[in-house]
Length: 328
Image (cartoon, rainbow, N blue to C red):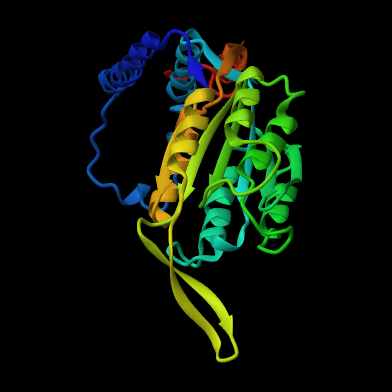
């Protein structure tokens, strides 16, 4: 409830003035009587008239309050808005090669990448997002979709060994670009995550980047892995043993891919850094939202006017029937 003319509420100060005037008037016209003893009046029951005789000032005060509220023009306000989003289509292309099982990120690079990417997906409910996985070759795990529950379930299901081992970065990027070729989104983005250098596939990474550029696809590349050596689990007859393997991220190629497509290269050496990278990408790729607001106001003074009229009619009726001739 809103009031178009709230200044009229100052008139409420008239109510105590009116009540005060009524009390003063009653005292002025009140008579007195002297008697030698009040014993004769002790057994007389009090009449309800003593209270009811003030009906007039009560009804008039309530009527005045209702009139003032009506003058302040109460209004019920209804507002709503229409929003239109310039959609962003995003494909996450993630490396699932054997080296992604290294445990410099916890529990390992692959699982850390999955968990943090899923949080990223949950924070972007308005975007279509798809998933491409690559190792020695690549394939689409999930096409572009707004059904993020399905996407997340498919994301959780990826693991090393689904396809031939290797690191075909160019193939992974080309497959992701192919998923975006028919997109009409205002912004088309690929997040390419890998921990190595290109060792297979029929398409060189830079060639795939040039194709992405022609299709106005921006690529953010992420190199995952600590600097130097990382612990890698190896199964032996005596159980799982860890070997320190060198981290061989081709940062030059990943930087070139990002530069060619207008994206950016990031290096994630631990879980916190990878999470921070996804947060940066989230800020860089915000959808533009056009909001049109609508407001509808309905006047609500009529009920208060009717209440005031009803109170005055009751006061008038009582004054000319039950309390006719009484001091009001």
